Image (cartoon, rainbow, N blue to C red; front, side, top):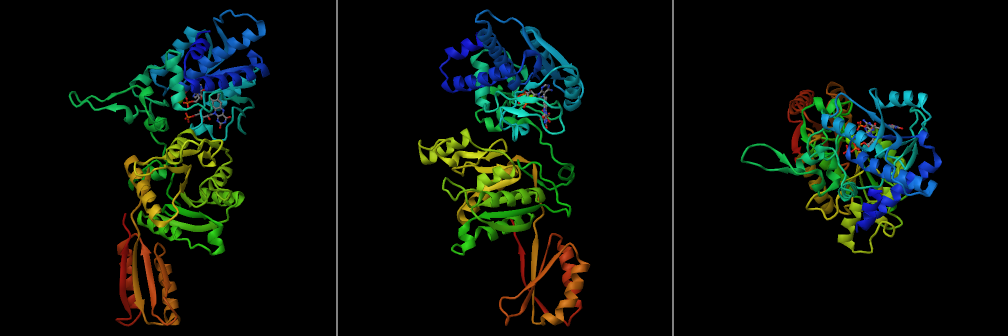
Length: 515
Ligand SMILES: Cc1cc2nc3c(=O)[nH]c(=O)nc-3n(C[C@H](O)[C@H](O)[C@H](O)COP(=O)(O)O)c2cc1C
Ligand SMILES: Nc1ncnc2c1ncn2[C@@H]1O[C@H](COP(=O)(O)OP(=O)(O)OP(=O)(O)O)[C@@H](O)[C@H]1O
Ligand SMILES: [Mg+2]
């Protein structure tokens, strides 16, 4: 069998291991289910092309085991389903049809959506398991294993994902080693293919060709950083963000404006030492100022124990209510470093060794740092994105809308924050908002004199935050006006001054935090 032979003859040990594991999964599935009970979900993409050839090899080996013969399997008897959509690339359609002819696939074309298409298919056919080319890192891989029952609300079948743990590099190593055909779009700079409406060539493969103004792209297999595979996929932003016109910042997709028109963040510190009072938390206040400076509101800062459940509970709560959650503390290989485990638990995924992260750590710590032995290389599986910046020796970790800083002091936090903001600005996506302005008035009036007029003022200006504090009981009262609309702040200050005699208030500070 040509695929099996090509892999056995190559000297890429990593590819051989990945291949053997995938074949093992396929063979287990074929032992569990009859050939009529399985189907292959094929869409002409690179991942499903890999799977096509793995299934051909796996089926051949399975038959060989059964009949003890070595004859070649010409046709591939597994039912193959293709959900054809009017917005598919013509190149994807023609590659899918050509592959079906070349490899004798029994192609079922389905023209309805995935769910109803599968409902109809399962009513009429005895299908119990479907092979998919889903890989960790795909948005749909979250929480999946190599064998994962379909989700609640979907018809019942087993999803079999033989290449779940394959990286972008593994996919191309396989396709190139086996010298099999793949869709021509991958030679034109496309690295991950969705519909014609949401997919463009990956800008990282662009070759500057100033002579004829035509943009040219290198082939997909030359993308050196597989983490950027989806850079050619247009981000699906919620309408609230699309409709607003804030300066674009980045990669933190899925962030929407809060009900109040504000972007809301929270900060979670993980550390018993803060709760014991042994160490003072300086990162929380610094983070609040930084968030304010980009116009975000902070709903809560909280300190939790070094306990996986305590972290998970807090993250689960905050990530569902806030647009972004920022965490610090509890990251590392020590017994008390439970932040990442807590995040994984909050999102109901496993902690798994992350190859790319391991590579960074290896540079930093040395060779003894591998996934099994060093828990630092374990990251929440399928939901983690590493945010790289040349100034950072280790990338920032982002799990959905949770950003985890590894900073242990304010200076390190400054550095990581600046990199994060730079990445955001260069990438486009999320919003930096108009920053907050804060004006402070000082007065010798007593609390009793000022209490009622101030509470009325709060009702008159509901979009402003109006607060009071004094440095000591003996010192004058300071009134804070915080908001984004300078005119509104001015009106509120004038309205307050009018209620008292001239000179009752002295403005002591105007603070505008800027990036
Ligand atoms: C054969 C097949 C089975 C699927 N099973 C499920 C499932 O059990 N649960 C689910 O939420 N989505 C399921 N999906 C949908 C995918 O997770 C995902 O939404 C789909 O591939 C669309 O991705 P896109 O939005 O990037 O185009 C299935 C898709 C296919 C083709
Ligand atoms: N329209 C479809 N018809 C059949 N199967 C599909 C379809 N869309 C997705 N799938 C299944 O989901 C898997 C994952 O899709 P995904 O788009 O991530 O990968 P791909 O298309 O194979 O490669 P690429 O990431 O380059 O687009 C596919 O390999 C295939 O098994
Ligand atoms: Mg695709």
